[in-house]
Length: 387
Ligand SMILES: *Cc1c(COP(=O)(O)O)cnc(C)c1O
Image 1 (cartoon, rainbow, N blue to C red):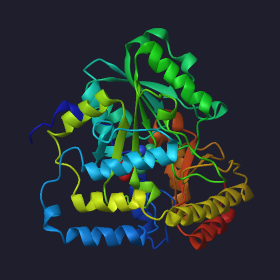
Image 2 (cartoon, rainbow, N blue to C red; image 1 turned 90 degrees about the horizontal axis):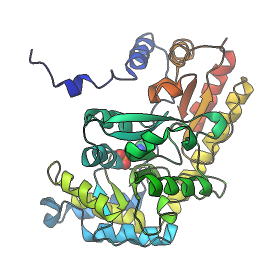
Image 3 (cartoon, protein in one colour; image 1 turned 180 degrees about the horizontal axis):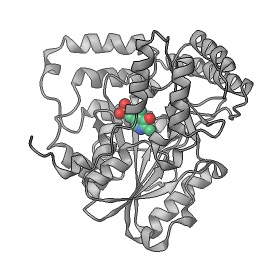
Image 4 (cartoon, rainbow, N blue to C red; image 1 turned 90 degrees about the vertical axis):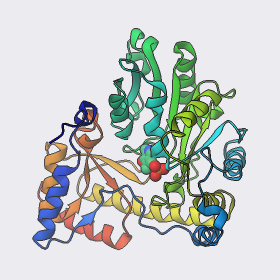
């Protein structure tokens, strides 16, 4: 067999392989699985977006290659949405870039900015793409641990001065996957201060900026970086509009960063299917009632899950944003052992915290992307579980 490139061999083994095996085993025994493992909304995409997509597929103009950077109309819709939502002005021509889902843009950022041996600051636990893509470029991920006692925010004072001087980019993600944590204004102020002092490009993953409860409104990093000198922000339509399968997102912010990411992308992909961009315009500019409905659904589920966990002695606070519950593993098990035990004995699937980095060990993540009836059934089964 031909030996693959060492960069591919460097990719750590698929994190959830053990859990997948356990799931298959349980299924073959006829166990009815309740899957809190997948961070993918079970709610369908709102009707108005689907209708727009249908209409747009009929137009032959949309069947051809789209423009690399995205239709100006879509980027204008993004700029309008930003002004309305964050009171931030963006030039749609050079401060907005359409992405094939935000994951795509996030994955390519290290390729645009990190050379072999250069440092990227990466949160852990975190979305695995930040670290793995940094490793693939030959870069060095410097881990910023997110600890519960610090509200799952990195402690910048712990990062050695020479690392900060060498670091080129920093990934942050609030509201946060997997911890459900959110960041206050003082955090964003501090981040921009560090970016300024050490010349670091901040990459803020804002995939959950619209999934927030009880009146909480997550902020954009660009509200704190008024001249857009130090940051880019990644957004996704996936979570807000339940469009994970459609593959559309966008990056906004610093002109140079948008240019460099876009330049790289012209050699990789050929943009987003225009019909999907029209659907994206409808999502951002159309009636937003469906977003409110989606959030109400998640909030009810959040309350059911958190109260259910409490009733079996697992105490977690209700997160103000995201559709994740991040809880401590009970009974002294490792994350992986607990998750295996849970599947085997109850059919409940959760994600081991260690899958999001070493700092996630001792935790598990529940994604509230299943209906209330099934959540109630899961709580019933948890009550019967001996830990
Ligand atoms: C879901 C998710 C993404 C990717 O979203 P897409 O736009 O569907 O690619 C990025 N970051 C985080 C933290 C996510 O949870």
